[in-house]
Length: 153
Ligand SMILES: Nc1ncnc2c1ncn2[C@@H]1O[C@H](COP(=O)(O)OP(=O)(O)O)[C@@H](O)[C@H]1O
Ligand SMILES: [Mg+2]
Image 1 (cartoon, protein in one colour):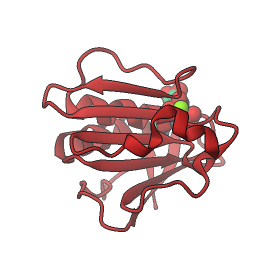
Image 2: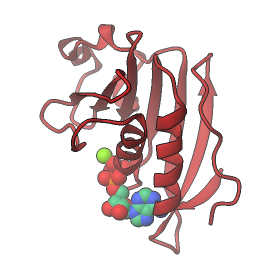
Image 3: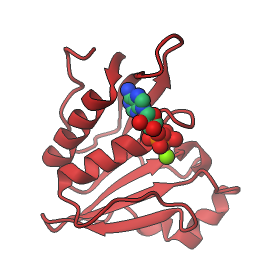
Image 4: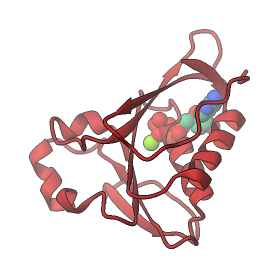
């Protein structure tokens, strides 16, 4: 686990987006305001998303085309009340060959998580609002991504 300022998180996210090859699942964990959406936007920027990246709210799932021909799928399950509602989102089709899927609040999906995935955990630091903890965890055999910056904050 390391500490990052927002600019460091954004720079790493862009690197991840530039480097990663689909299919890939990135699960973004952490409390409200910890930076999951900041990171998702940075990764999308690195992949080369066309147009602005907002946040999925009503739809829970938004798909963006990218300049490199990949699809970026940004999912926010905060408002998902029952894991069984996932099927209405087309959950079983996620992780297609050309997709980079980023999921905020993956805990809402219960047991229905992909086997091969990166888990990125963000957290607050008690005495500094501008710093976050970040932890990178590999599950199964996901496509490779750059490691966390070694010299952050
Ligand atoms: N070191 C940091 N990393 C990420 N965000 C930070 C950091 N410091 C301050 N922030 C702010 O925290 C907020 C994170 O919001 P957001 O990414 O929407 O959180 P989440 O999606 O986890 O609920 C943003 O307003 C951002 O500017
Ligand atoms: Mg968010």
